[in-house]
Length: 161
Image 1 (tube, rainbow, N blue to C red):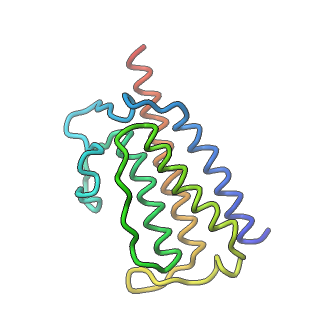
Image 2 (cartoon, helix red, strand yellow):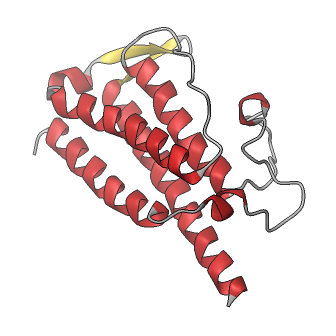
């Protein structure tokens, strides 16, 4: 199996997993705060994402963060300057639209690449990494957060009875 085929297949599996976690997401779920002091969508861009022990985050924060992460890695993948973010959504419909656009761009870009393109190295943080590493990292990060979203939604439903 080629590198390209393997990554496209993994993106397909990730898409199914994440879609299952966010299907039917509501505005109420996006803003649910089960514990005090959570990071919410408000101020997402100003928060220190490199904190040693960041606070718990809302479903909305996690979901929009996933789109922001994909967009940032696409900039590295294309070796372009960081693109400005569009206005961040504050509702489930907007978050779903942003996610579909970001993830869809990633899937489209990877699908259009050859295995050689994906094996090529790009500049990152003063060094180099392969484009395939970027794709694998993004898949891991987004499946991780998608699973968290699914768990939080199950927890909320269980608490509501």
